[in-house]
Image (cartoon, rainbow over all chains, first blue to last red; front, side, top):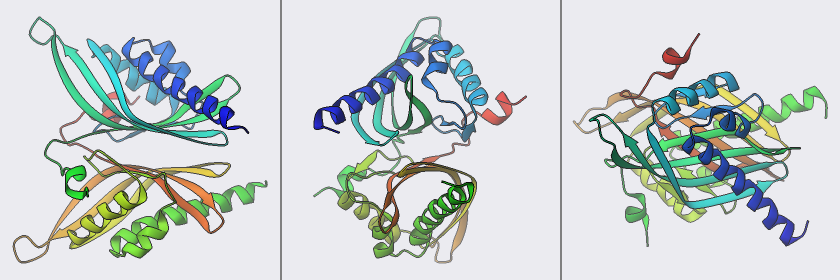
Length: 148
Length: 148
C-alpha cells in the first residue's frame, strides 16, 4: 500500500461521509438507504437512545426527514482513520435548520459531534454506526479548561 | 477463523471495554492511560466537543476523576463487532454517581449512549475513539414512536 493509495482510501471514505449528509439534506430516503450497510447497524440521533437494525434506523430517518423543512451541514474538524476494511470518521456537524412554525422559515444553528463508522464493501464504503451527540451550551468548555 | 475464535475475540474486546469503565470507577489514571491506544485518539464526553490526542484526552480524565466522588457503571445493550484489527462496541451506560455537595453523599442516576472503537495491538485491544452522549429526557422516545 503506497502513501497515495492511503490518501485515495481516505478520500473515498470522506466522500461516503459527505454522501450520508447529502442524503439527509436532500431528504432522499432511497439515497439514505444506500449509505447504510447491511445489519447489524446502529444509529444514535442527538439526545436519543440507540436504534438497532436497518429497518428501525431507516424508519427514524423517514420520520426525521418528514419533520425537517430545511437542513444544511457544514462539517469541520473531520478526522478519518482507515484500518483494513473499517474506517472511522469523527467530525463536528455545524447545522443550519429551518422550521416553519410561524408560517415563515426561521433559521437556527446547532452543533453536533459525530462518530461515523464505515465498512468497505464491493460497491464502496457503507455506514454501520452513526452516533451524533449534542454539544450542550451549559456543559463544560474543555478546550478552555484543559488547554495549555 | 473458527466460530469459537470469533467468540474469544468478542470476549476479549468486551473485557477491554469493561476495563475502560473499571479504570474510571477506580479513578486510576495509570489504568485509564493503559486502556487508550497511541495517537490519534478522540474522546467525546457527554455534551462536550471532541478532544483530540492522548495528552488532551487523559488530562480530561484526570479532571473528571478529580471531580467525581463516586461512580458506577452498569452496561446494557452491548453490541460488539470485530473486523480485522478494529472492534466497535456500542452500549448503554447506566450510571450511578455520588456527589457530596451537601456534606453527605447523594446518589444520582443517568443514562449515556456510548460508542467505543478499539484497535488490536500486540498487548491487547486499545481504545482509540470513545463517544458518550446524554440521553435527554426532553427528547423524542424513538422506541415508542417507531416500534411496531
